[in-house]
Image 1 (tube, rainbow, N blue to C red):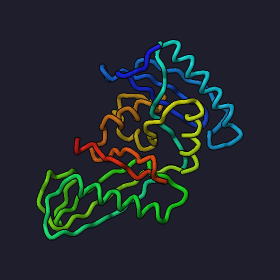
Image 2: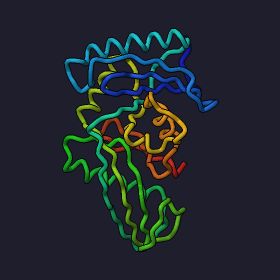
Image 3: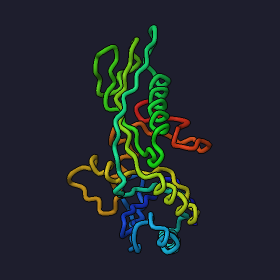
Length: 237
């Protein structure tokens, strides 16, 4: 079997079912999917071992069908712990050009402020809803303007921290590297009305391929306790 390079695997998770979806990135389409029932939420410790065994079994089945190793994937999860929290962060300079460094500093500041007071939630998505630059409002990143004062209105999409830890432990148990976790309650808002997303995977695929241009996609710093990042990208790259 080969390692997949031009394809992506996604896992859609609800309280009753797990979907495993296989996407062809060359043609931007869902090629294969399997699903199986689970006894309840993975948040319940009593279910963990049962779900782990079911997941391993179905991963092996899909690997055999496709002739590929499933070593990594993205997760889309629907959870009642979904919350969106708004933040405003500000900085003032003598004068400078607006660039990635300015935005990164402000986004990092918002995340740090959040984690100082929040013990039970983890940030899954970061969205910049407005850029207020020298009192002028922009809905999208205004390329490299000179400015003195900047305010970002930021939205943080969060899920329960214990749930996220259990998700990571579950997939670690199955020897699958988790690349990104997506909140289905957030992602489904950006799916074309014509498309159905019974698997939870299609909306996650769209989000991770830039469906919301206001979202900051960040790469986590694994050495940090929380999801502070090494790099952010989307509107910069």
